[in-house]
Amino acid sequence: MTLLRRGFLRAAARLFALAAGPVALAAGPAGAAAPERVVNIYNWSDYIDPKMLDAFTRETGIRVVYDTYDTNEIVETKLLAGRSGYDIVVPSGPFLQRLIKAGAFQPLDKGKLPNLKHAWPEVTARLAAYDPGNVYAVDYMWGTTGIGVNTALVRARLGANQPLNTWDIVLRPELVAKLKDCGVTMLDSPEDIFPSVLQALGLKPDSRRVDDLDRAGDALFRIRGAVQKFHSSEYINQLANGDVCLSVGYSGDVLQARRRAREAKSDVDIAYYIPQQGALMWFDAFAIPKDAPHPAEAHAFIDFMMRPEVAAANTNFVAYASGNLAAKALVRPEILSDPGIYPDEATFRRLFTNTAYDDRTQRVVTRLWTRVRTGR
Ligand code: N2P
Image 1 (spheres, helix red, strand yellow):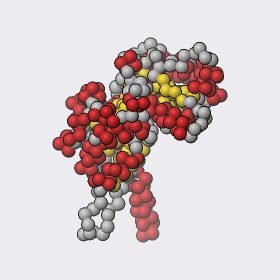
Image 2 (cartoon, rainbow, N blue to C red; image 1 turned 90 degrees about the horizontal axis):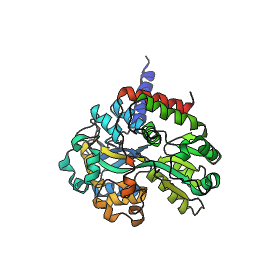
Image 3 (cartoon, rainbow, N blue to C red; image 1 turned 180 degrees about the vertical axis):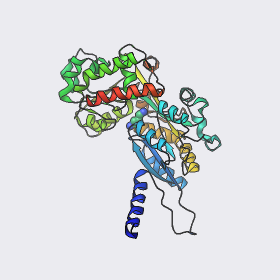
Image 4 (cartoon, protein in one colour; image 1 turned 135 degrees about the horizontal axis):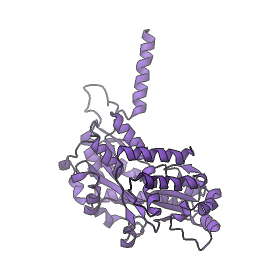
């Protein structure tokens, strides 16, 4: 092999390493000032007030490298491959559960997280279903998976008398067909959609029975033709711009769409519904990969996020409920009183949770989901 070629391969390997994950650039020449401190964060898109990242760096001197994703699957794939380079990831409960079992995380050093005292005990207890003993993770936000609609466009097609707070408008073929021309989207997330459809069909939302899963798959297959796109983040702008009229989506994302439409002073009016049949409630939690290059900085970041004023700023920005109880006093009243964000008692009773599938069930669900998405 020529030298030139070897040089090329080395350069390619470096490029690949860059593409594969964040790489902290060493600060200054060797022997100069202490190396720059960095934290590499991998979080959901549209899930933080960017001002909080600046505030963290200003206060601690730790630079934040911030990447985003919109599906749990990509986090799982990167973590299972190892050497992701990330110091913090924010998976949802079932993925957290599965990644903990796979040994992907390091236990949190709670001595470095004094602000854990602000955590919401009920949320922490629910998170323990995925992380027994709360060893590896701290809840960041929680929310629901429901239905976002452009009220005017949907009303014009379904009439004034059709309730909109029902999975019927997604799953009854004759209803959703009427919405096809104004645009329907669905999360590309079988772990959200299958439990929701099972619940809507009157089955156990966390069922592993192949018959049940087949029925949910069939229900989805019947309406797939009305779905313009399966995607888990584009719908925010699409709803806000009036480009689509119904999205099965995440609570805060739909409410961000409503805010964007209002800020643009358009006549688009977006509403979020937790369907009367019930909706999935999920928890997204900070966790530190076992091979995180900067665990001390990761702890500093999580602790900063747990400050009540920081947690409240994030909730005010993204319209998801915080896992931080003390933050509630600082959350804007219209957010706190919105049952789509902080569900009231009656709404809360309609919410259910799900857990990680075993490998066999996961294969069934993945196969059904591929059929729904591709039609084959
Ligand atoms: C943020 C979506 C987070 C919710 N865009 C997923 N659990």
